[in-house]
Length: 112
Image 1: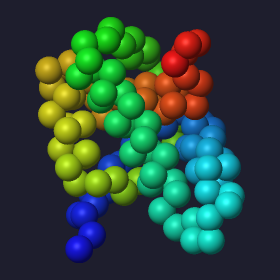
Image 2: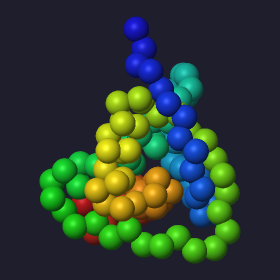
Image 3: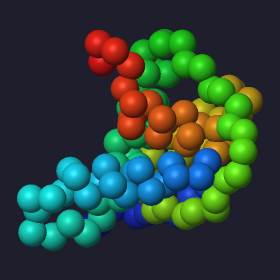
Image 4: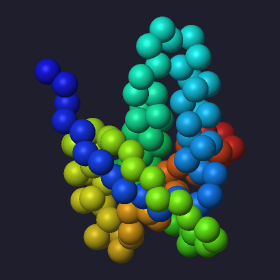
């Protein structure tokens, strides 16, 4: 039985989604069936940020300026619920959370 997925509608800064697609292609270059690769890298990025928050790490959520593109990604339903549960207490919008998670995934801090 497969886990249920939910669609997240995001407004991401120009080029950020394309970078995630490239990251997925890099990770899955040796696999015979690369289906779901983009979903996997988004889930990894979101999980990494949630784990940092759960560990009590301070995370800055910078304002995202400039042109944004609307995209939709499917992620695990349980992960989606965890993300949504974090938004209100932090007074965040989904796009701010996603942009921070993706930026951290694509450009991890030194020593991580």
